[in-house]
Length: 97
Image (tube, rainbow, N blue to C red):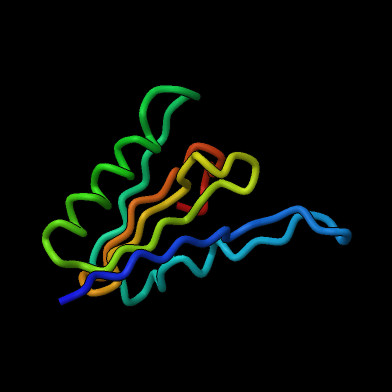
């Protein structure tokens, strides 16, 4: 079985301002788990999500990496569609997540 890695930018700055698909990373009502992590810059949020994604790929799952619109090396979320599980950087969100 060949695992798929999907890389997306769910948000971006456009001529009409910032446009966001972050609310569509995973359907909240259908999700088994959504893990929301918060922390300051450089504490390891992206590294942890990249490591989790790598381990899920090793286990044979497809993985979606949702990259940060302002830093393409940073991850704002990782989704394992088959498990209906996501981990998202919720640092910027106070009530949504």
